[in-house]
Amino acid sequence: MQEKKATEEFNKSSHTLVIEGRNAVIEAFRSGRTIDKLFVLDGCQDGPVRTIVREARKHDVIISFVDKERLSHMSETGRHQGVIAFAAAYEYSTVDDMLKLAEERGEDPFLILLDNIEDPHNLGAIIRTANIAGAHGVIIPKRRAAGLTATVAKTSAGALNYTPVAKVTNLSKTMEELKGKGLWFVCADMDGECMYDLNLTGPIGLVVGSEGEGVGRLVKEKCDFVAGIPMSGQITSLNASVAAGVMAYEIVRQRIGKK
Image (cartoon, rainbow, N blue to C red):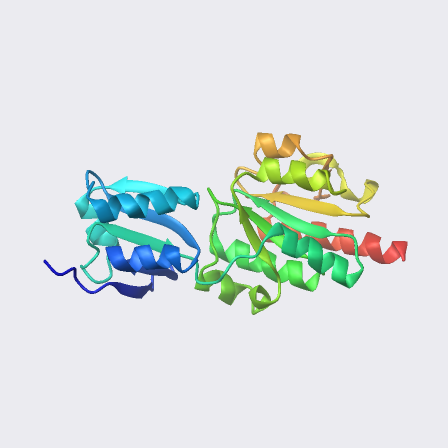
């Protein structure tokens, strides 16, 4: 039986490119398109599906095996053929791209790393702040993180076109590798030492967690300092994007003062 025509549709609810159909998904992997998640009909084990799953694992893509009802609910066309891939609306950069950008500017690297930021509006706002503050890039983990969707791009107010964003498998491991290249890390935490009392100059990575969960334990343990933002009101926490902005501009202030 001739395979149904593969389709690509723009998912208006999640603002993510949805790729449906076996041929379309296979070609997406082969073309180098960044796939954030793959959904496969549970129990489907024929040749094309095995090829798709193999490609997904090769690229360390998150795979979810789901029932027919859920797959049909996600489908935009009704022609998913047992596989649906969610692709990034924008291409990711690499951490090396960010370090190269800092070198080209003759500046110490300034990176912003995000842990547990799943709200695309927060991600977009942080990318916007990163651009304006002169950061060389934003790093996000593959799991428990918003991807580069159209919503992120819109909220970034165009900054996504200029600020590199990299997606890494293991945030802690990436931090270790960057430490070997001279970076040190500070994370924002309400119980940390007052940020005004810390030296935030030099090659630095600013780590920001979600409003509810904060920075994860393993990532926090990799940080050299924990910085607290002074708070005088009755509310004891800041929105993640606001906290990132406050911390980023303390880094900017100290960099300007050092010149």
